[in-house]
Every structure is written in structure tokens, then in C-alpha cells.
Amino acid sequence: MSLFRTKPIESDLEKDTGLKRSLNAFDLTLLGVGAIIGAGIFVLTGQAAAAHAGPAIVLSYVLAGTACACAALSYAEMAASIGGAGSAYGYGYAGLGELPAWVIGWMLVLEYTVSVAAVSSGWSGYFNSGLHDLLGLELPNALLHAPFDPAHPGGIVNLPAATIIALLGILLATGAKSSARFNSVMVAIKVAAIALFIAVAVRHINPANWHPFIPPEEIIPGGKTGFNWDMSLIDFLKSIFGTASEGESRYGLAGIATGAATIFFAYLGFDAVSTAGEETRKPQRDLPIGILGSLVMCTVLYIVVSGLLTGIVSYKELNVGHPVAYALEQVGAHTAAGLISVGAIAGLTTVMLVMFFGQSRVLFAISRDGLLPKFFAKVHPKTQTPLYSIVLSGSVMVLLAGFVPLAKLVETANIGTLGAFVIVSIGVIVMRKKRPEIVRPFKVPLFPLIPIVGALSCFYLTLNLSMLTWVEFAIWLVAGLVIFFGYSRSHSVLALETGP
Image (cartoon, rainbow, N blue to C red):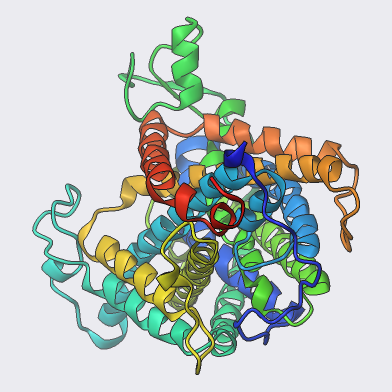
């Protein structure tokens, strides 16, 4: 069927595609670390511990990290054998067909767009806090929050959030190498901040804070009963079959899974490394190193930090917007807490930069294939960057960051990513069957067990996301299918070459 026609795999992954090949394995690893370490370690760790898992947030990171590792191994095989700027979109096009590829690409667009805009809101808060602490200045509330934000009435525009995205767009437009250099500096700052936290925290551990390590499941008195939009899909299914608890539950083994689904946002970004395939000097060797290296480094840091965080203060106190700095303040390390805030600003900056990079490259790849107007696939002759994709992506992100409250959309980014991971894991199995002759410089170990575990674990995490998230995701997919059948299917390069 034409909906499942596959794109030919290029035999030479290092061919000239117009983008400048300037990145190496070290650059890619730092891009991955830049994307992964940010809102998760500085914000979500404490909040998920307080609301869902308690000290067992460490196990939530192990669960989420395991799901990511299985998906990352599949990404590494696809990146080494197929490559390209489109990441999972390109892999799906080569192995599963045009419609599945479009769905993957559409989910990646959702992931990167919402992630950058959401993280920019956190960056805005840290920026304003830094102005106050260092210079005694503070922006008015009207310039710090989007209009119609129920949590912050009176807002007109989130000016810092919109501004930082615009500045990062200008940086990306200058070239991949200059962006990578800036990212390297920011990564060094935030890793130093994390090292500082570890050095201070180990001296203030109170083992009593780790007991019980897995808090017993609680039913919150007066908690929500019946259907509500914040309940997870798995709880909704339980309610249908009459096995749901009366009231809202937290902690216990289910809390670990819910915590893993929540902090999965902390792992968003390693897949962005694969979008740099056409700007990497030796993609077959360097892409797997960058993907797996950054994931391993970040998982270790997450486990260490989450363990120390719940060891120096009670997990019940960590449901704040700056849990890492807050924990240090509670043990009297105020100077270290201030430096941690600087690291958080650097961390959030790199997350936005790499996600923005990934968004523009995925849009570039989709447009080059004709599924979106080819205007966005044009490469600037001087900077050798997809300038029009950067401008379009940046414009949408600026509008979202400045004028739309995005607190509820973080989970939407998670479900888009998890969906892409499921398809990539399945795609590796399909490609091994359909195209056994392809040269694979890197192969998934324990095949097909690892891809199957990756697909099932990522799918399980989606079941722990809220019903509202699933509805938002369904609306996004329907919109994507309308675009595909209304434009993409008849304008794709394959359609023009092979016929409808």
C-alpha cells in the first residue's frame, strides 16, 4: 500500500546533504547531556518524590532509565545504519513506511516544541530570581506570566521566556559548531553545580529520611473519586473493571511507576542527538557513542542526586519549584544554594538549545521529503543551517512560551516521546526482518529481547499519564492525520516518483 511505502536507505551516510559536518562524538555526548540534564534534575526530582514515590524516586529513575536504555540501544542501531537529520522519523520512513514515519515525526515535533516552551517558563522564574538575588531587581508580574494563567493572574506576556528562545534561535542560525561550543560551556557550568550539590549533600545526610524507602500506599482523605481528567489511564481502566481504590492514591509500588512516568520528562533529549546525523563527521561511529554515552552519564547523576536529595530533607518537603536549592537552604548551605540556581539556569538553557536544534532538524528532514512545504528544507548558503526551519520553529515556540500557560503540557511532551520510542523499538525488529543485508556497525544486544522490553516498558509508562494528556495527544494526532491526507501524501517525494 502507498501509505506504507518505504524510503530507500542511502548507502553512504557521510554524503554531502548541504549541512556542514562539524561535530564529533564528544560534541554529541555533550549535546545529549545538555538536553537531558535540566528541568528533571533541578525541578521534577523533588516534586515526584513528594507527590508519588518518596525516597523510592531512585527506583523511578531506574525504571525510566531502563526504558530509555532499551530505546536508546534501538536508536543507536538505527542511527548507525540509517542516519540522517530526521532521527526516529527517518528510521521509521526507511523501515515502517510513509504513514508511520509521519506519525513519528509529528510526535517528535510535539515533543520538542512543547518541551522548549515549557522549560522556558522555568528558566524565566530562575532568571527573575537571579535578578532579585544578585542585583536587587525584579520584573513586574505582568511580564513574567502568560495571560489567562489561573495560577498567576494579571500576566500579559512571559517576556524572559520568549526572549531566551529568540536568542537561542539566533545562536542556532549561526551554525551547529558555534551552538555546540556554547552548549559545552553551559554543560560544564551545570555539571559543576551538580558536583557542588553532591559534595555538600553527602555531609548532611540523615538516614532517617530514607525510612521507609518505599512509603506504603496511601489513600488521600477526601481524594478524588470517580472520573477526573487528572487520573491516569491505568486508573481509569481500573475504575471500569471495578478494581480502583476509593480516593486518590500515592506512594507504594504504583507510586514508583507514576513517578517514573512523571520524571520521564527528565530523559527527553538523548534522541535529539540522532538529529545531528548529517552534521556529524563520522556518524556510524559517533552517533551510538553520543546517544549511549550521554544517557549513561545522566542516569548515574539522576540516581545519585535523587538519593542525596531525599537523604538530607524529608521527601514530604520537596514539592517546591527549586527542590535542589531548597534542600541546601534547609541545611544552612545558602551560598551553595545560590550557586545551584546559576547551574539550574545553565541547565535549562542547554535543554532548550538542544531541543530547539532537534526540532529544526526534524522539520528540515520532513520538509525535504515533501511531507511539508519544501521551503523549510532550504539550507542557508553561508551558515549551512536550515534557517527557515529554525525561524518557523522559533516563532511558534516564542508564541507558546510568551502567551500560553504550559504547566499541563509537560506530560504531552512525555507521551509524544514515549510513542516515538515504542515505534523505534518495533522498527528495529521490523528492519532486521525486512532488510537483513544492511550494514549495521552497531547492533542491539540480546536481540529481540531488548527492543521488546523497550517497547513494552515505554508503553507501560504512557498508561501512567493522565486522561487529559491522552485526549490532548489524540487531538494532536488527528490534526497530523488531516495534514498528512490533505497535503503530505500527494506532495511527498516518493509519491511524485512512484505515483499515488
